[in-house]
Length: 235
Image (cartoon, rainbow, N blue to C red):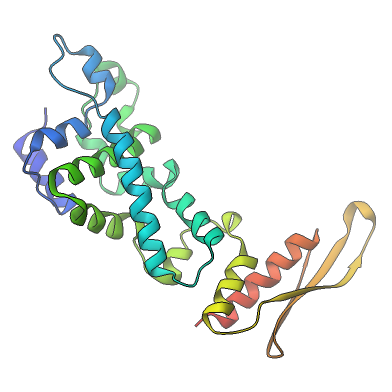
């Protein structure tokens, strides 16, 4: 069971103190703990995780639209997918030291449940739902803004792996934000044999901005050119 000191520490980490502490306990209780209880007097966090997933999706969407009003739907969808992924939420849960507070069965405890990605990500979503049921949307929004969104503007963009970024779309969003024309892409040259061709693509925005880059395909070359030009026109 969570001690008084545990609760105080967790309230401090969450920047929120629960009125109904049973909600918080339930959010931290894995099904393995319930299955091993005799008789079972507690509920696991699976329903809260289900609710928390929906709340998190809504809040991330709302915060992204507010922070990036000029971004196209596709780019926002891409950013949201990263921020609600289990890999990302696992890192958030680790930063909160959430594993320390999990209520696990003996078997799950012995198998390293406190550091398992799925358990921690699910527990974080369950805690969001518990906060919502206890105090409404405002405290949940504050936690999501500070712990999940983390950094404003370009700093948030930097948390997204480059392999997940569509730089062509990002460049289009950046051009729109500055009132510039839509980027245009042109094949400049291609060389080499069919199995190892190298393409040079040029991206141009109006008459002022242009960049060229090479790649093993037209797509990769245009993505590289877009990435470089993004860095140069970013406000």
